Length: 230
Image (cartoon, rainbow, N blue to C red):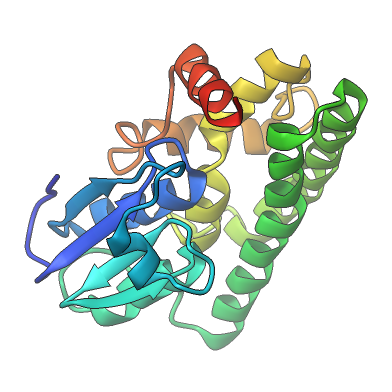
């Protein structure tokens, strides 16, 4: 698949509903970079994936000019640095303090949202899934305050007027929040609890770089997950 503009020889190995893959796709779109997308079968991983990520053997992997880069946050930062002059917006801020703050909250998201996400997917007991959903709710309440501080009235995103690093990392889970509601019966992103974040989520999902990337068919995601677990 391709977006506007060039990017050299870019290939992305992924799975269509992975938030970690989706965040890389969103940044590629933001940068207007063309790339080849290769859908992986995680039950029968390709030789290219195993060769490109021999340590973790998982997606996403970005291959640029024949050289592989693994781990989604690493890939996003790589794209931001390598294609800084490509015409697309920067994801990380120029100011060192703001850049460090963005990295802190991005790490918080993958720890406090990503880890429970994994539990909801693979835990067998309903009580354990519900407990993980509650952890995500608590994390989003913390992120409500972070959004207020980071945006500082400058715009509708953590990055201010435009989508930034924290937006991409947290926004990649938005499609799964709807899946959790059906799986566990918990609305983790609720305007009654976190009104700023709920409005942010609607803006992010509707943004051009994200709206055709984030999974929006809840039943399709659940069927895919069930087939994988079976």
